[in-house]
Image (cartoon, rainbow over all chains, first blue to last red; front, side, top):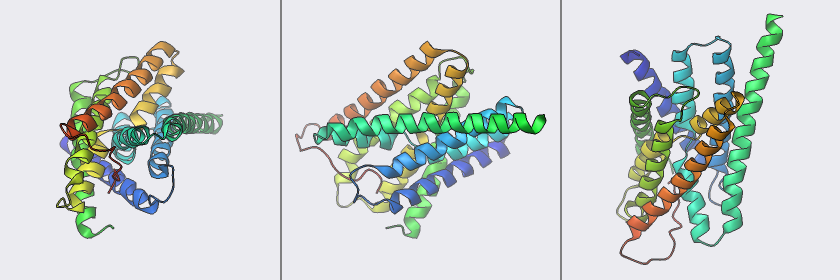
Length: 129
Length: 138
């Protein structure tokens, strides 16, 4: 890995963070459920699943995968805000919202990544035949 | 709201957080069939740090918004990752490594959320203030 690749990954991560910040501002605290984190985590998982399929097919190499997954998706998604916001629901006695926040992020994140993986995988398979 | 200071802080912080995560990925590499120690570590450490920040620095009225955005949304937010967890789980399950995926998911949740709790406790100690409900992101 050379310095140019590292620089591109850092810029990609910064752009992902900026997008996450913009989305957090778009969803103000008025709602009872933290949708901003859900949106970024599902979007990043979708991208991650798609890139995993592209990598399995050899369409993209490890450098492009690093930029898209470690950079863009890694910068866009977040674990810490998810865990701390969930904890805040627990501490304020809103157990149902806390449990829902954990389950919905996991189910939609895994669902989005799996769906993106298979869509890309089958699209490439069809194109090859 | 988002002034230029906040935008600069989140971009710089995002690059720093991504750089630290990338460094750990390089120092502790893992194969598709190995346990993702680096991702688990960043998520546990990041949860602890954010828990500490929201109960200390965030509570001071003198803390500028761009500092919160730069550290919380930028550095810690980009240091931790949800997509790497999901992609690793998908990769493990697709290879039939169900036990590895289950172990990784459970450890991420237990240690990650436990670290957030520990961080909040450390930040509040020795005060016994009511639960912090400050906005995490701003």
